[in-house]
Length: 109
Image 1 (cartoon, rainbow, N blue to C red):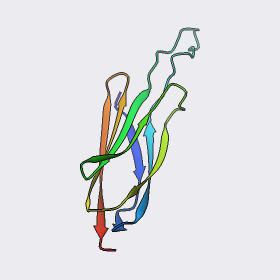
Image 2: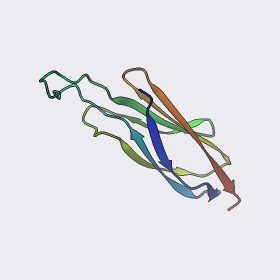
Image 3: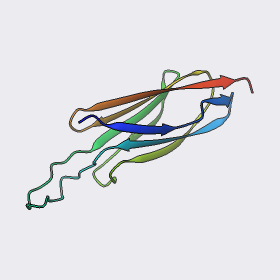
């Protein structure tokens, strides 16, 4: 199952400015504890790891667990230092890896 995401962040920022990054991962996040309409367990299927890299360094990482709701929403902040891409990566327990890239243009402060 290919997953989709939605990411909101500014396209431009001044050097040294702290920007807000909002991410939404469309994923069922099944805990493995629920039953379907026939009483059978719904298999576990969760996003386990989320990272964001900027200018070659991980600037945010989150480990997710079965208690996280469907379609995880994560908000974090990054200090704009150089014009570069932010690389977003989600990995689920079925081996699916979703990556997104967004460019941030940084202007002199």
